Structures are given as structure tokens and as C-alpha cells.
Amino acid sequence: MIDKRKEKRINVKYTATVLDSVSGDKLGILVNISLHGIGIKGTMALQVGDEKKIVLKVDKTKSGTDTIHITARCVWTHAEPDTSYYRSGFEFAHVSAENTNS
Image (cartoon, rainbow, N blue to C red; front, side, top):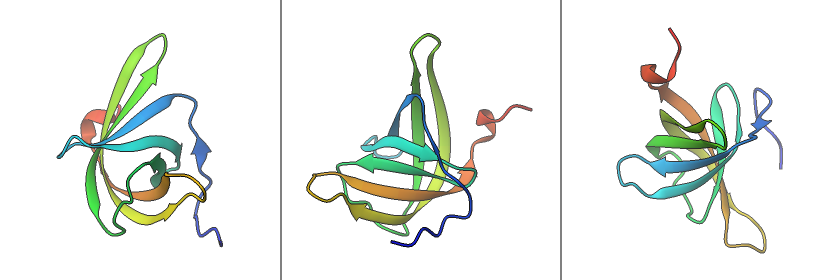
């Protein structure tokens, strides 16, 4: 598989649950992040091209939980071999202003 990423992805240190903010469904967990997108691992096959309103709930052991609201488009998805999991890549379309420091 050819890697078409424009920038390096960074593996996350904290557990982050990825939720669909419209349906409330758990899409999976955050695996990595870059300036323009995220990679997730979950049990559902997601539809390439779908735009989702996503809530990232980042669990930080000592300082509580941070919640980040984004809109992102699924750009790829594939089943992990010999498991019941799927990996999906999302490109950011919008990050809520409440998530930024002014």
C-alpha cells in the first residue's frame, strides 16, 4: 500500500473515544493525528466520502477529560486482516472555534 500522506501522523498518548455527535454512536478510538486529519480504529465499516460531526473525548488520567468537536470527511477505510476491526482515515473539514485558544 502506497502512503499518500502529506504530513507525518503522530500516535496519541492518551485514550480518545471517537463519537458521532449526531447519532451518539461510538465510531472507534483515535489511533493517530496530523495537522489535517485523524486515523481511527473501530468495529464499523465507515463510508468513504461521508462527512461526520465528531466528538473526540480525550481521557487524561490526572486532569480529567477534554472534549473536541470537529467535522471531518472519511477518505479511506479498510478491514484489518484476521480481526473484526476497521481502520479509517478522516480529513478535517472544520474544527470548532471553542477548541482553539484565542
